Image (tube, rainbow, N blue to C red):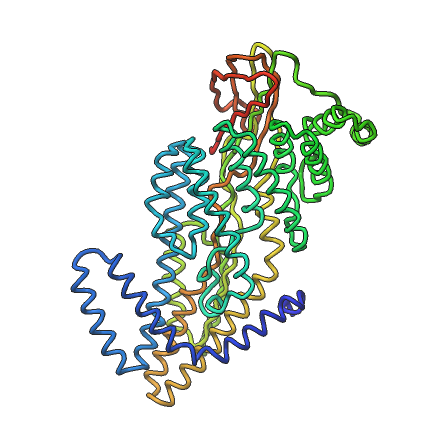
Length: 531
């Protein structure tokens, strides 16, 4: 009944499932040879001391298995499942370590950790590597390395998008993590924010404006796709500031107007347009002598006022990348039964210890069940942080921060828009594995006896339990949200004090900074409050 809710999408998935069941046996020989070869390489790289002797022993075992196709298939199922599960656990631990470095503001250690992990990302996850590398290098103020990583990430995004529609055969046998990571539309869009700041930090206001123009192209494309993410109010707002800082006032006004519209029409937003944005749209219209548009803004937002930078002063714009974006975890459902037992279980897997326990339990349960089905879906788990807002003070005035973007909300909405398709595909994959396992064990039983048939069923069940994992990949080094504050300060050096405020309104930290303000310019100060 569930599979009929999204008819068009689910028809394609079920059609793929039917094809997969038909061709599974014919492609298994090729898959086995390839997996055994990959497993041999994996053992050589990762299994510790005395690698050559292990390699020779593995080759001998492989040669023996070629003469025993039944056992070869059984060993393949065990090895493939363990191989896939082990890689997932390694990345989970790695991201835990990376988040600790970011939380401790040890960005050099974070950048080094990402670089050292490059081979573990692998080619299929190379996009994640370049996204993470770009972000942590930006946090470390290594703007040149950050720019290089983000430019490669853009290229990988564009190259992989054209392949994503036709990809997915392996994911119907193993899991979605076997496919290359294609990224989400909002992740592609937020690259432009980081790249703009990279250029601004190096004095490249015009280069930052080029990134703003890329945003226009991206959102036109996203709109043509009719997906869930087609606009972003904060990015439009931020790019308006970038345009204005580079002297493109007309482009800035257009971007401000689009931002106002996006804040207003996005029903998932928990906040409206910031007063600063309203003032920007109003002031830019006045400066362009577009009095009718200025009047329209004033009519919609009576609080609109002119915010022209005073003579001899500049504007300080503080952007705080606050917290760490929620992490994806697994929600697992299992059904196992024998002649005397029916077992149903649902659980969340959100750390390495829980993952190890769940894998061991699932493998044991599946081995002693005549029939076994497991499905696993992704969900987001928020990462706790202590800073909810901040205030900035100076002898020339102060300001309080406001929420400009909720990336955690954007990520959750993106997943929610995809979840029906994920459910349908995951259930179809479970059906494929179940049918293929039953057919294989029945054939083995007929050709090689009941003992081998039982062993084949155990192998198939174990493969199903360990290979079925949710796709938890994402750009994990993004902030949870973005806070902003703006104020005018006189040209030259100014001392400011920033106070960080927790959920209960208490000050949880503070710091004083000496900053240099350029007259008649927007001066950007970027903060990172991870915890």
